[in-house]
Length: 193
Image 1 (cartoon, one colour):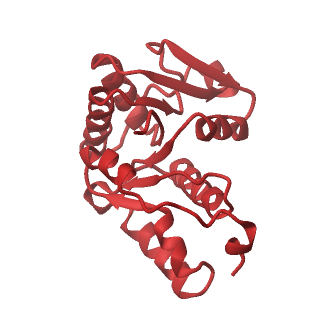
Image 2: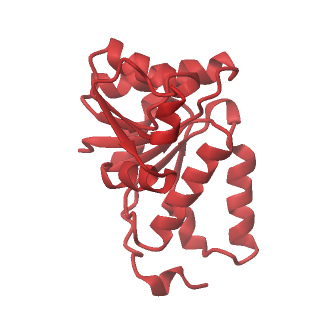
């Protein structure tokens, strides 16, 4: 059973309500199942909704934020656990190293960059753990199509498509993690096309 997940999501205060609600539902769901959440430490947008929900439902959540963001007061003030890093790279490495699985909620460039980086790490055998894309209202459809296109155009192997799973709702995340196909392709040779 998964104990800790890292969640990638947006800090946009202008995100549509269905995305904010999904983050809130994920926080409630993880709390209910006693799953520790590691996230980017922010207080607005999906990040804020996720953290507020985890706190409200007595869940365990740890924020990880770079110092320059903390100095701008972007961090969530209600967190009991906040780790301050010196760089964005250190932040992402800590989030990955502390987690048993990665979950992506809707977000912008930062969220998509984190998702694509963790998929790349999995392809290279650096993160052989479940990756779940929560495709609220079809938000990630264009990115999923792009990943399929990369496979079709031989930039990735067909086998790479099992590196991530796509669900529609937050309450499908843990089942997807438990039912994931074991990632055994953890050698650099497999990453070569």
